[in-house]
Length: 203
Image: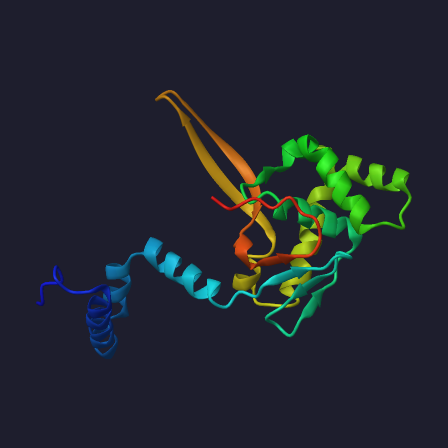
């Protein structure tokens, strides 16, 4: 077999392509999968999806559009937009049980997206969302998911919806704990915002 040590990445890619075609012609996709490995296969799926993801436009008056999909509007109620903006501003993720720590920020987004709503109603809505014993935040995230699934397939939608991500923490050798974060996986360079959002870079 050719030594790849002195080959360029492009030359290696050509060689891999030939080997993949050889296994496909032999009907041995099982060997191909074994060679690639499930973790790398998932990474390749993610890379392929990223190339097809649409930019998300947020206008000054908080309307959401998929710019590369015929500028289709993502029709959400003000409260859903407020929740979405909060998670969009925090690519590191937020635990539902700690939403109370983001009360002020969530309130600002809600007031911005629902200018005609009574302030008392807005505060009442925020109280429901940040209450860990209330199911309001789950209901709002389910609605957001349903809207995106109406515009794209499930795999693509997984980048736009608010979904779960478990992060493991280790303190020394004795203590291990997990954060059950909720995140929007969409790369932030694909977000075009005309509205004031405290965007942070994804890690």
